[in-house]
Amino acid sequence: MKKLNTFRYMTGLIAFAFILLTNPTSATSKKSSSHNRKASSSEDKRVQDYKRKIADINQRVAAAQKALEQAAADYKAQVARKEKELKGLSDQYREKAASTKKAVGELREDQAELGEALEKYQKAVQAKQAADAKRASDAKRAAAAKLAAETNRKREYAKKKAAEDAKRAADAKKAAAAKQAAEDAKKKGDARRKPQPKRPDTKKRTITTSDHQKRVAAARAKQEAAKREHDASSKKQRADQAKRIAEAKARSEKAKRDHDARSKAQRDAIKKKAEESRRAHLKRFDSNRDGKVTKEETRAVLAVEAKRRDAARKKSSETSKKSNEDARRKPASKKSTKPAPTKQPQKKVSLDRLRANYVRAQKSDDSAKRLYASAKRAYDEARGNRKTYKVDLERLEKNYERTKKNAYTAGRALVTTKRAYEYARQKQRR
Image 1 (cartoon, rainbow, N blue to C red):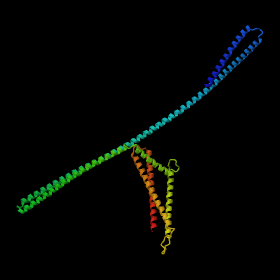
Image 2 (image 1 turned 60 degrees about the vertical axis):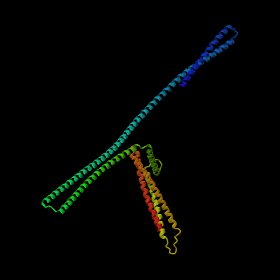
Image 3 (image 1 turned 60 degrees about the horizontal axis):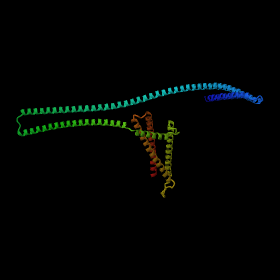
Image 4 (image 1 turned 180 degrees about the vertical axis):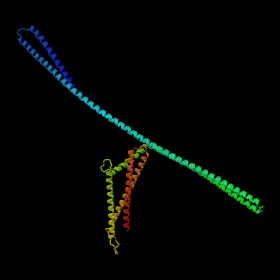
């Protein structure tokens, strides 16, 4: 478009120049004609000059017209070429617009598919969270129902036992009263059948009757005391049971409050501990330092560590064996009790090295135990947190199992080094 405007501007300039060239010709012709009327016939040279100028101007006009025609032809050619280029650009734009529209449509379809997948995943996560919450609430209700059923069972058992004890006490009381009535009736019958006893006998019978009444009163008092004690124990049991129920309820509420009141700092601390455990795990097992730990890398690292421990154990056993052989080869001299100057330093160096291995194994065991406790605590906290994702929980569980195995391995290494050190010490004392 810029070239087309430039061409139009040049065409206008050429037309304007042609107009200017035409006007001076008319002025010159008027001037020459007036001059011819005034001049004499002897001035033919000037006429020739004018004619020559007019012919020159005519040639220039013809050239300008030819240039104008050429410019018009060039203009048409350039217009045709520009229209062709414009058509090509228009076709290219339409093709590019069509391809872009198609790409945008495909991207929209991908976006819709991703949105549907995201919505489906969110629904699945929400359904899982709802199912977990329902399971937890069902478990809590089941535990509460079980506790209530146990409480009711104990209460009913206490009531039944109290009723049975009361019935037994009433039966015993009735039996004692019946027995007492039978004895009184028997005594009255004996008194009617027998003659009146002497005074000393009456006093004795009175004493016997009073002793029996005392025994009956003591039995009744004992029964009442047992009943009161049973009532007090039942009451105490009910109070203890109510107290246990209240404590359980308070613990559950406190646990719920603690769980709900768990701050972001605590969650960040858990994440930080998990990240530290992950870094320690990567530092130990990530051989190629690509940020991932595979089973092959884990097996290779464990195999290297096992070989290193076996080599150290073998070296320790060889050293202790060599020390024992040197001790056996030591000549027993009666005249001189001075030890050989070359064998005692070897034993001392071996013992020092074993002691260093033992201290190193103790440190490794303590470190492995600390890592195991930290991983176990992080895993337990993550299990108790409902907002923990499944991926994090699986990672913490794997870290927990790994630290557990490491702690077991470190413990075995500690036992082995301690046994070797103690054995070397005993050999040196001998």
